[in-house]
Image 1 (cartoon, one colour):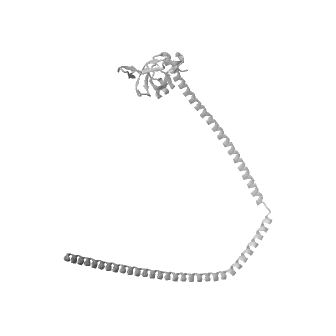
Image 2 (image 1 turned 120 degrees about the vertical axis):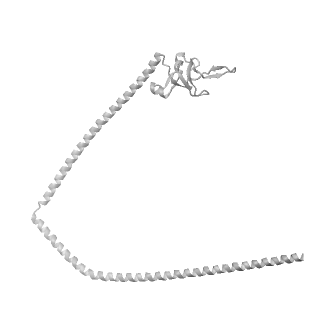
Image 3 (image 1 turned 90 degrees about the horizontal axis):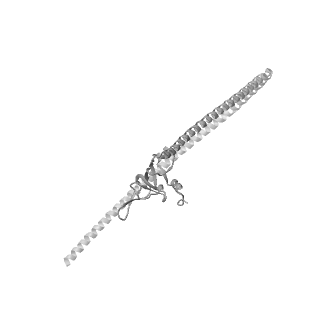
Amino acid sequence: MRYNAPIHRRRKMIASHLTEELMLKYNKRSVTVKKGDTVKIIRGGLKGHIGKVASVDLKNMKITVEGATVAKADKSQVARPIDPSNVIVTHLDLSDSWRSKKIGESKIKRKRKIKEKKEEIKKEKAEKGVEEKKGVKKEEKSEELKEKVEEEEMKKEKEEKVEKKIEPESEIKESKKTELKKEVEEKAEEEEVEEKIEPEKDEANETTEIKKEVKEKGEKEEEKKTVKKVKQEKNEMKELKKEETKEKTEEKAGKKEETKKKVIEEKKESEESEVKS
């Protein structure tokens, strides 16, 4: 389909990407390559080469770049055909009025889109502000209702307290008298009980103090006994260590004397053998 397409369609197929700067400037990703455009090779053996487009071959769908050549067998240089997909456009040739007009329209469209986006953002902000105001009003109304309810409850409580205070005075006096009598009787009973319990408490305290003193004395004696035992054990251990060290020193001295005797005997034997020989 691509290679069987007519020439007017093949012309549109010979397109390559723009650089990032040109993309932002003209609001386009790719453009049909034209003779005179400056181009940078991205792929292949000539990667990094920059030059102007020398020709556009619609039949083979290739382009040639100035300075991008290949050596033949007879060492003559020939322009190398390059696929437009292996190239990036760095500068556009806008000498053609129709082409410059078409690219400029895309630039205007981009500005329009930016304006539309800004207007949409402003509208959203305005809508949010209106919604926030409505929410504030609702909150204020709910707070007012709560305050009213609280005021009504406070009034009811005050009325109930007033009603309780307006009881007949006679009933209040009788109730107070009965309460006072009960309190006096309870105090008298408590005093009697305390008088009985006090001597018992004193006796119990004395017995507990005696027990504590006995325990403390027993603990002190036990501590003294344990300290004496520990000291005795330490002294015994020291004596045992001294005896062991003495035995070891004596054994070493005996071994040294034996070794000396053996050495002397060996020397004598060696001297006798020399004399005989």
